[in-house]
Image (tube, rainbow, N blue to C red; front, side, top):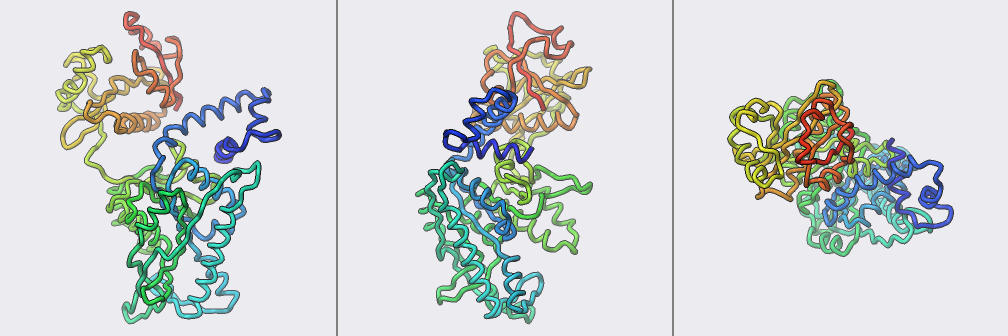
Amino acid sequence: MANSNTKILNDSLLPSAKGSLLNESLTNASDPVADLSFVEQFRNAAPYINAFRDQTFVIYFSGDILADNEFPSFVHDITLLNSLSVKLVLVHGARNQIEKRLNEANIQSEFFDGLRITDNKVMQVIKEVSGSIRIDIEALFSTSLKYTPMAGSQINIISGNYVIARPKGIIGGVDYLHTGDIRKIDTSAIKYSLNGGDVILLSPVGYSPTGEIFNINGEDLATLSSIELSADKLIFIDDTRGIFDNEKKLLHEITTQELNTIINAGDTKQSDIIRHYQRISHASKMGVQRVHIIDRNIEGSLLLELFTQRGIGTLVSTDHLEDIRSANIEDVNGIIELIKPLENSGLLVKRSRERLETEIKNFYIIEREKQIIGCAALYLFDNKQQAEIACLAITSEYQSQGRGEKLFAHICKEAQKKNLKELFILTTQATHWFIEHGFSKKSLQDIADEKQALYNYQRNSAVFVKEL
């Protein structure tokens, strides 16, 4: 599925020309199902395309991805993001390349407390490797062969002395020599280039005002860059699939608070992993609202994570003043106050207090500072295959700010936990919103028998169904 999704996304950007896959798919009617699949996936990506425009992403990728044959495809995906007006800062790793070069040169490199002690010989290798990687990346971004995803691309990838560093110094009696810490990042220069449509490339080295060069940690560089640039996303692409729970199940979404619980209960034998989680937690605490962990070994993993609802890695989101939770009897008054204007206008079916009290277990609410600003209900039926979403409402003050999408995504997740196959809604005026969120217009016979029996023909509501 990952390969097919990525191919569709990539090939959709190819020039329309004789022999191109896109052109063949449009003219060859032998596989209409594949054509419809492309259309559906492209439409589903539209909300993300709109949301990401003019956002800033800091993307760290390990040195391992550079040695892969698939690295050119990764560059194509970066080019795609750039074409969608995403501002990109790339930070590359080089650990394995450095180790390989050191072994070839028979140079010993010592570590203490997980950090490399960088002497003059090791520093020379780091400079050579980092320079070589930078040139290779710049060469790939310069490719613009016809009938490839890079065709017509004119991307300037900019490197420079953006990172000011200082020596780590002597810690616990150990002199780290040319291993350094980040002192400052020239964010004004980076933002100037980003606003001009350039892609910024940062190598894991820093410079001092006295002209010295220091070896710095790439993950730390990406983390601090995302903070200093007030980035919308920080993305780590390496051999880690994501964060797992105690049952070894991948967590597709987790809050910073939940991540801190994992950190506090962390296994000291996994100090590198805990240190990485601490970076993510720090970035979230300092204002980076979305941090993604993605497996480099999955073809098109970056696109799959960013442009599909479920993603393929782990998304760490910041804690908010708002919380989505199941409603209880004490929330009835707040729900009544919220939905009353919509009932009076005819957008929602009127519900009595008694009915709300009886059905309160079906409701979910968005609560902000003890105030209910959104609600929705999920009604289950005897066939246990379908459920109805009803009474979706957001207070006017907070409309058009993503609350409806957030509440809807939460309900979809709850429905999946209940192993439901489909969701349906009855609506008179909000048809476009539901179509944009994956619903298709259906007939009354396509929904649960119990709901058919209660259908109000006077309202003449349209029926929409979404597969989960």
